[in-house]
Length: 147
Image (tube, rainbow, N blue to C red; front, side, top):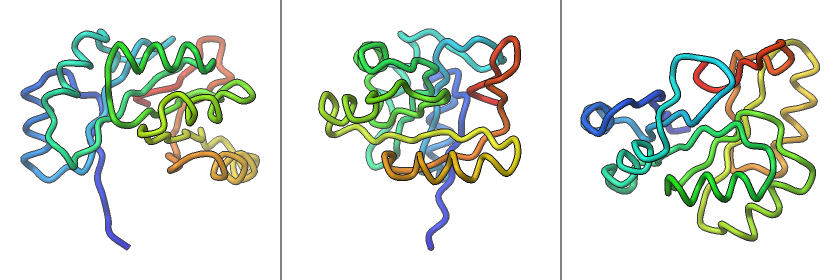
């Protein structure tokens, strides 16, 4: 198995360039979130994503859950990978696959206990990859991306 590293919470083109020069296989940019220190504006996400050379993956971390909102967020930012940090609405991932067939989809599972295993098994069937995170979507103010 080959180890790949994603460096998340990019805040500038220069920061992404440094991560790439140090061997990152992916860089992540956090879109608007209900909480956390990592979000940046969509315009900056788009500039960073455009600056990263292939084959490095560019991840948009989005808390959108409906397919139309996720597609719109992608079109504003143009990454090659979408990281869904909240549970997508029923049918959303299938709709994303139809609308954005070249874009990889990563499902986040917030590990909070043994029930996370079932959630991961369910998410694995529809995603290109799973990412285990420490957030808590059950808080009064959801803790999602960049935790």
